[in-house]
Structures are given as structure tokens and as C-alpha cells.
Image (tube, rainbow, N blue to C red; front, side, top):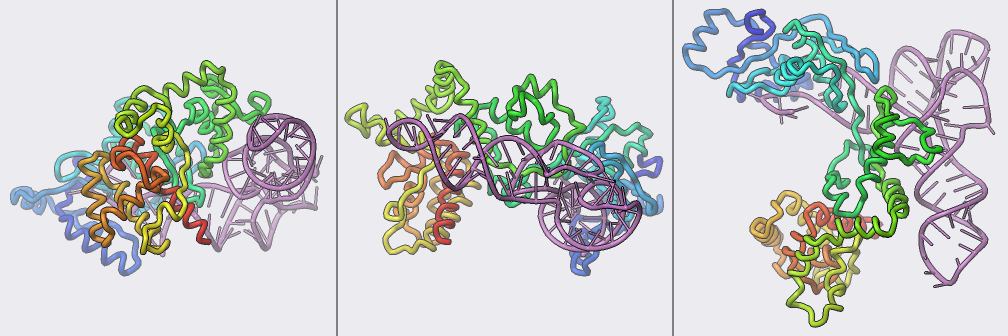
Length: 385
RNA sequence: GGCGCUAUCGUCUAGGGGUUAGGACGUGAGAUUCUCAAUCUUAAAACCCGGGUUCGAUUCCCGGUAGCGCUACCA
């Protein structure tokens, strides 16, 4: 690439580039590499090299013209070269960026069809230019729509549980999840199984046609997933239903972790449920008299819960990490350890009396705990309106 | 800000120059039921806006608007 002039060494420092970017932003100009090193003389390059200056390798996007490629779902898409930045191909540490690695990799692996998310559309002209510079045949591109939150923003875990682990722990059946996902974005014929919208993996493999995928980003709607999951649960034989329970909410591993927390706290086995129901419930909504600390308003309590959530999201799911993180938050907001932990206890367990909080949260799992705190916050916000 | 993508009930979608614009979830009403679910019946609910093309546009074209994405020595 360097030899053919499709790429060049760039000796600009990160600080210089950052300064330029800020100026461009301030002037409401598109943030773009200013081209400082695009046409250095061989002597300049030798001098910088000899001086041991670090450099990156950038692609030399043609100054004029445009690149058009075909997206198999949307048709031709054109980008003016003036809108394509001189992408860094090789970082100063010698490692390639995604753009270079991706193109080389896919070529070497003889990839025929690149199926990736929509967010890559704007990078595709860079990739096409690279294939051309190498003299390689570019693959076909299929850019898939992005899943959305209820408010249509790009799906995020702040607004939706996005980890499959959460859905498994919360008791969604893999077949139901698969079916539901297959329903999103098109690709499946409408008349399958008498238009019941229910189909198996095998049927999906047989009937799915990527050419029918719709380019608009669908909203990930839990309501319909729950309905579908209910259908799948009802369709199970009693035996399979029990097996499903035993492999998830009643799994040995989960049960023994819970038992370990309450063994010293009960006098009869019959009390097991009293202390542990929050481990098995989907939704827990404590009443104000349970979660509201004395001398705290609902508003400041809710605000503090929001901060607890942020801390929980950012913290490793271990006792060693969680305890100091939560205490640090309480300290910085003048919430006593007691108020702090009691609020979280109420949110997670629904009660002021429970097995040890952090241990319980660890057993319950990060994904489900975060979900529970989010639901609490949502419910409180709604009740205020 | 620039560039790009997208646009059918609240949501997931079918359809496509002439249709009562179809289905599913959810919602309302009713039936059934010891309760709650489930089940059955039923109702309300959509082609983003403005031009153009056309005998006729929700469908094709253009513009606007809105949403989203990208705008890194991240992927």
C-alpha cells in the first residue's frame, strides 16, 4: 500500500490531532484529518524516521470522486471521497486497526458475504477502497438493522437487559427466545405454521431468507417475548416443564448457593420460602414504608437509588469490589451505611430483613440484580407522575 | 454541525399503482371459571408530511420532518 501510494506514513501526534479536531468542532466543520502528512517529501520522511519519530500508516483516500457500493438489502450507496477520512490502518504500536485487519482477513478467508450491523455502513467505502488498492475482489455486504429500545434509541443495557444470561436466568426458554428473535426484522415468511408466528430452529433454517430482512430497526418488545415464552411453557410436557425448572430456577448450583445463605437463619425447613422468595420472584416492589429511610424524602431516595444503580453497573460482581464501592458512594452523598444498604436491601429483597445483602446479590446475579433496581426506579418514577 | 440509513395500528409485521390495508402481541368488552391464568367470541387501532408522475398513489420519484447510525491510533 505504501509503495503503490494508497497509504502513507503520518507523524502527527495524538495531541496535535486532538487540537485540530477541537478547532474543527468549534468552527462547526466536519472533524477530519487535516492531511498534514499526505504529501511529505521522501527526504522529510527519511528525516522523521531517522529521528525515531513514531508514526501511523493512513490510507490515502482520493481527494475527489466518490465510491459507490451495493448494500444487498438497500441497493447502491454512494459516499463522496471528501466525506471519507484518511483512516489509520496501522497504529503506532504496529497493530492494524479493524479496517485493515477486517479486509485482509476476509480476503484471506475467502469471505463471500459480509453480514454485519448497520453501524458499519459509513465505514464500508473505506473497506471498498482497500479492496481496490489491494487489487482484490470485494465481498457482498449485508448491513443488518439495529435492535431498538422502546423509545427507539439503539438498544442499550441501560434501558433493556441485553445479555442472554439475564434472559436465561429470568426463565426464558431458549426456543422461545430464538423464535422471538426470528420474528424481528423480517426474513421469515408470514404464513409459516398457519400464521401462528411460532416456529422451530429447524423451520427457521429452512425458511429464513436474508433477502427479506427489513432495513428498519425493530423495537425489542419484552411484552411479546413474554407471551411467546408462555406459549412455549404451556406446550411443554409436565416432565419437560419440571426439567426446565430444575435446569434454571431450581438448579442444584443455585439452590445450594441460596441454602448456604439461610441455613443458620431458619429453624424449620418450612421457613425456607419465607427468607428466599425474592430469589425466585420475577418482580419485587417494596412499599414506601419498607424502602424509605426515616428523614429521607422519596425524591432524594430515588436519586440515591439511581446512583446505586450506576455503581452496581460499573462494579465487578464480587464481595471485595461491591462492598467498598457501595460504601464509597454512601460516604460521598452522606448516606449512612445503614440507610445505604437498607435501601438496596429493600429494592433487591423486598424486605428490611434478609440474608446478607451483598452475598444475596452475588447469588442472584448481576444481570438480574441490575434489572431489579432498574424496575424499582422505573416504578417509582411512574408512581410520581 | 457534516455524511449516511430508515419510515404501514402503541409494538412486531404482511402487502403493494385500483385492497373493506391482512395477521400477531398488547388494550377494551363479553363468554367460560370457586379465584387467577389459560381458552373462546368481539371491538377500537396504521400507510409521517408536502409536491411530482399517473385516469388513480399508502405503494414509484423528489423535497421536508422525525428516528437511528457514523463522525477514534474502538470495534
